[in-house]
Picture 1 (cartoon, rainbow, N blue to C red):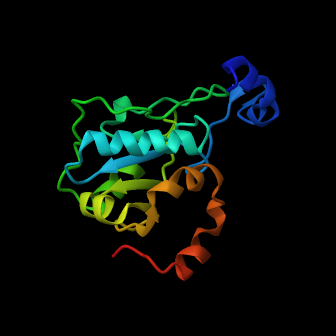
Picture 2: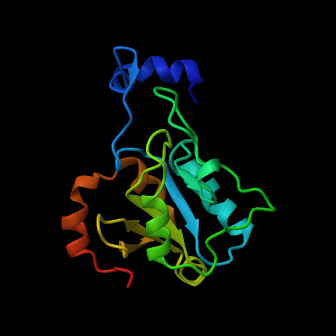
Picture 3: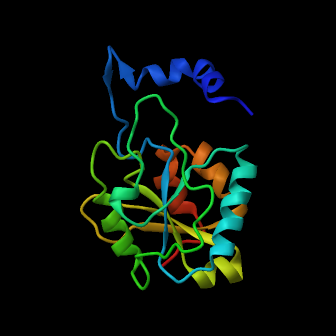
Length: 184
């Protein structure tokens, strides 16, 4: 695994676009790879931590999910500095979204303060206990401008890390139209 300094040396060309002429340029609404993870049902912390651990292994240590609770606890965008998501949930953590809907989660995500929060303001992941435990899946959502209800698909937990790090989000509309496991 690279040290932080080695990482920045390796990826400095990429990070230059966020630090042009000494002025930080913030990524667009759907450019950040840090994605909010929102639990709308009471979830066992052990299950959440196993999922986070499995994603860390699949992405070679990249933590791109942020276990959401309040805007104040979301990470601030820091230019070229790599921001880690949640690696382990605190055993006392409790979701403030219990009993809410995907539409409520979408409104919360769209309301994330623009800059400096380093969270994707369009795509997010929802944990619903029955789907998580019985199907081994999460709900990936895309918040839409002017609409409360997001587009939503079911997605295998073991493939989630790769979706976050490698999915071309410009393909969402076409993929959504063809996707068989939409969440209604």
